[in-house]
Length: 80
Image (tube, rainbow, N blue to C red):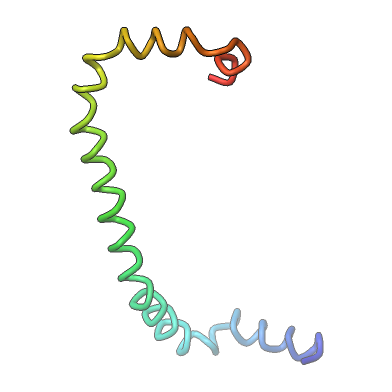
């Protein structure tokens, strides 16, 4: 495909003559990705629920976690 043909197709798409194919393509793409979006949403929701569930247990051990971090080498602590 030459550059001129690409420019002509782009002009057609921008001018609105290609809009009749845009909506079906868009809806097809969204339908194809709906399952993946649902899986990602469930996964991220589960991770969020896990954090909320574990937070009280981690908060109760804050002093011991601070002690562990204090025992790390200085170069590792500087990364934090």
